[in-house]
Length: 378
Image 1 (cartoon, rainbow, N blue to C red):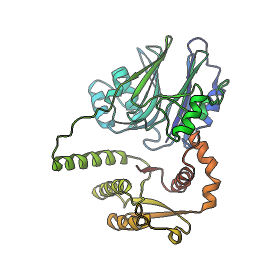
Image 2: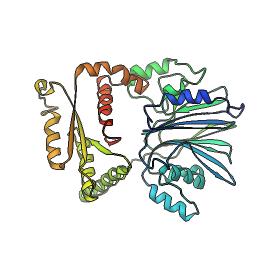
Image 3: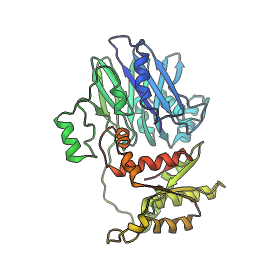
Image 4: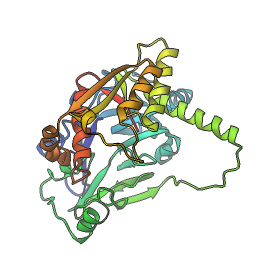
């Protein structure tokens, strides 16, 4: 998963604030249990917590590149699916690489393309890059906001992190619910208005946006927008395109140097993901795909059929499991566990969410993490 924190100020030296940086970064230990790293200069500090997925040695962060025209440092959370294509293009433009991590490719892509780097990325990402040549901080978030980026601005300091709780570790930042926050929480929660949070003066970078922080302040820009167009393809062409897009998007996310699996609920989404992932494993001579499902104590006894759900999830899971020939694991959770995990789930989200749905997912992921590091799910 990974996570990062940081702050920048052009009006006072911050190189003596390592302890603050560490306190902020420590809140992200569950996002990145494998490794941590720091970078600090007179204007900016970065902290990073890493979950190792690709290139354990070559993907350490914060990552720094030094050239005659400046120093560039990145903190990044995500996965770039077109890494190979980007790397080839950069090599043709004179860049060398010392690792096979997408972090190095992303950093050098920024050095080459500048702010236009976001127009060359296919993936899920949130990152921040210190550009000493321009004396500014560049930051961006993926097209649909899969990866988080929160920030605030106070006393000439731009403070940012992958989770809100890390921002509250910066001195002077208070947990305040104003009218807007209360409306977000009770009116549309667990959803929220893009760009906002439930806390006063704490914002999220909107999906498909990038920003620059320099001596003139914070400057935000939208780099992409979903456009609705008339659909003119035939049924056959539509089916072929959907199949291609599904296969491309799913298999591109199976690149990993650590064990990988899928969640299988028996529903349409998870079944499609598991099907393409299983086919990929077979085609590439890999071991059978590991799939995981969640169930509850006595659910088989208490399940009541309805028009909405005529069969339990297990009925469809068994069908898919036989079809996939996957190595399936069923994790069974009891009601007291769900209740005991409600607070932990809320803390993980930084705000109230979907109650037992969140605690179920939290417990489910904890069990899966004992055996696998990366999972594909909807």
